Structure formats: C-alpha cells, structure tokens
Length: 344
Ligand code: GAL
Image (cartoon, rainbow, N blue to C red; front, side):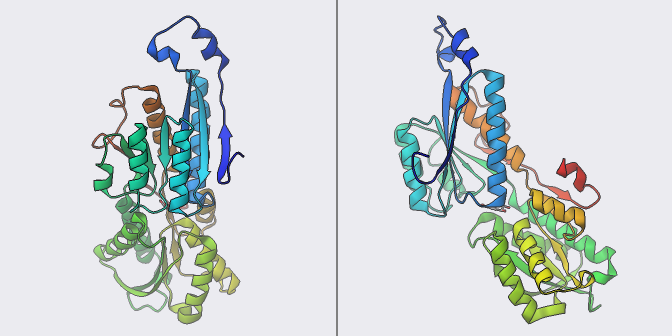
C-alpha cells in the first residue's frame, strides 16, 4: 500500500501482448497496458464492495481475453468528499486512463470534473447518481447505475402481494398496512426515489397504508438494528410492514427483532432491495418476504467495458448507452421461489 486509502493495486501483465506487438507500429498495437483508477465512497458498503469484486474479476477476464494488461487502483474515500478529490488528483498524476468515481457527495462533483477535464481524462461516475446538469458539463462524463424508481415499484409490489396473499400480514385486521420505512442516506437518489415509489405502488394497488414512523440508517445494518430496536420499543406489535431502502438495513431490522426475542410468527413483513449475498440468503430462509435485485454484476461489467473502450480509444457507440452517456441495468424481483437462480 503506497498511500493511506489505497486498498489494492492489481497488475495483469500479458506477455503475449508484449511479444506479438514487436515490430508492429500501428497506434492500436502500441497500447499494451491501461490503468483504471477507482474511488469508492465507503469500501465497507456491502453492495458497493460486491460490485467492486465483480469489477476486478471482469478486468482479469478482459485482460486474459485481449492480452492488454489492465492495472486497477482502488481507493476508499471513507465518506469524505475532500479525501476523494485528493484521490482523483493522485490518480490523474499516476497517469490513469480513466477514473471511475462512486461520489461521496453527489452534489459535489465539480472539483473532480474540472481536474479530469484539465487533463483530458474521462470520468465514469457509478452507483451514486449526480444531477443530469453536472453530467452535461463535459462530453467525457458517463454514469453507470440503475433506474431507482423501478426498485421502489418492485418493492411496493412485493409488499402489496404479501398483504393480499397472507391474511396474517394485517395483524390487527383493520385493512390498513401499518408500516415503518428504513431509509438510506438523506439526499441519496436511491433513498429518495425508493421511499416514494415503494409506498405509492402499494397505494396504487388499492391498499391503504399508515406510516408509523421512519428512520435514516445510511444503508447500514448496525445503524438499522439500533433504530429498529427503538421503533420496536415504541410501536411493538403495531408494525405490520418494514420497507427498507436496502437489504443491509432490512437485515439490521431482523437482527433487532431477534434481539427483542419476538416470535417468528409475530414478525412484520420485511422487504429489502439489492439482492446481496446475505440478502438473498434471508429471502431463501423466508426472513425477508423478498428483495429486488440491483444488478451490481451487470453494472461492474458495463463499467469495465466502457472504461476499457475509453482507455483504448475504441468506438463506444457500440456499447448500449442512453443519450450516449448512461448505462443503466434493470432491477428484478426476487422471491423465495426463484432465489436459487440468483444465489448461483
Ligand atoms: C444503493 C444500494 C445501497 C448502497 C448505496 C450506496 O444503490 O442499494 O445498498 O450500496 O447504493 O450508494
């Protein structure tokens, strides 16, 4: 580790590329290695860390397939935007061909954009979506993620189906679904949009809802456990549904129910989003009524292919992108009946 915050440097050097390139002087063959810099907002975030694992695997495969050495530098911004700005400065100084940024503060991309534009290095933002106007500031800015509203709609559909199919879900039999919302970071596009669409979808399905309370738990399992424990103390058996903006917080709620020694049959319906490995296991065991698969694997592949093409100076018009700059992967509902397909 050369600098604090840098978690790994991976080198894939393919000798074949070096050998076959001898004597050939076309512009394309002269490139035999590229360097991709990545900075994540928090390396301990379950979904983001799984996405990065996929990214490294895809980079290794791409390197084997093409004979181009792909060097990846990964930094952890530890939730500090100024630390992340410095990391980007360092990556630019290190000669990265492309920078991939999982913004800490999605409203503060300006410093990064200006630095990258000065050095003419493309930036791929991912997972934490900046406002569209910021992505318009330069023609070498891209975004890889998903359509947050889809995940909210699917979460609402899972909850509505549970209410309709299982009379036990309406514990007090009043025909109204009493719910608690566990929210991710304040201001995060996924938190805002998922919260809104999950509830409106249940209502659109003709089910009356009553919000008991909400808690912001920053995508974090331990924070969600603490907050849910307080909510259980206050609302106890009135809670019929816990809608969580992600799986980790849903699992934190489950931790709180277990710690409070509430009988399994008295648990509320709990729904998550992400389909992380731990989330999928909870769907399999039935502790989660369902989750919504956030395709981190597809996002990692999309980001790798784009980063590779940009680094190699290849035509990117063949990649599937909206408006020439957005790669968005679809979400999918995951229920106990089909969870095994996702666990594979
Ligand atoms: C969301 C994901 C959360 C968290 C967040 C971080 O898309 O569902 O679990 O990883 O991104 O930005």
